[in-house]
Image (cartoon, rainbow, N blue to C red):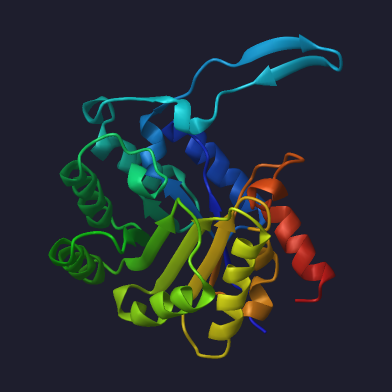
Length: 264
């Protein structure tokens, strides 16, 4: 049984933070990292500290409430160049739109411009959403192929999770759309999270490249059991708080330890 590759999604909102996180991810056992370039447009707010019975409580507003910078405020070329020089692992380069749970503040033509520049820079992997217009996506795929850049063909459903049969069909129908087909949805309950596991189980043994996961409670099930579900890639995090599993995430070291413990 071959272990899936493990990708740590970086949480930084500056190039320096991402480079520092990537170094820690390398030491923690990640095979690659995801640079969420759309996060560079986030303005991290000041934390608020309140006095509670249990002591001081530090709070930060949810990220979807953070302000974002204008497109012109981030130097695209310099940022990509610095990340390429400073990150020690293969990179999945992602510029997630708001419609799929991301933070990119500009119009789609600007987002596509960033993707083109990332491919030109020689990035290892590029995340191309299946929602990108067909002609434009084909152009990006051809450029990626010419530059030796592999493709994550992704779909992110922020409203929920379809049934397992729909997820299976999506993976099968889009094998030519990328090197790995990725689906991530927001689980509203455990029944939603089970759709991910059921879909992965149905796809097992078909020789298809996929990475299926969910956010919220139960979303970590498919990540933890990815080796027996024939998953190609698992997204992990460097975060390590007690509510991590409730958000469907798993720390990269905990993931490796779980696979050892479960004899995967």
